Length: 43
Length: 81
Image (tube, rainbow over all chains, first blue to last red; front, side, top):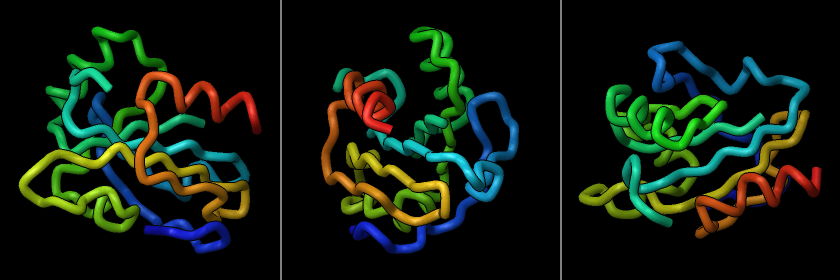
């Protein structure tokens, strides 16, 4: 787990449209990142 | 900025995004590297845990939750920012 104040691990990944997304793209913005187990499963 | 993330393929996530009309990117963390870095890959045999993270404007962790409600949490947390 991560703790408040830790540096957020950088990442690069493809999004669902095939576009490359990296954390550094959002520098200066607050980012809300949420994980889900499997596309289209109820929470 | 909201980002969703799962270990699914782009095709699977594209269907998911279209069904629910999401207007934010769904990351396809197929090698589980992001999930592992963010503590959402406790069981490699299963999908990602429902971890929720808020990253501040300086690239630091502001909040980390082991389990969030996938439907409500992203919009709830946006209201607090």
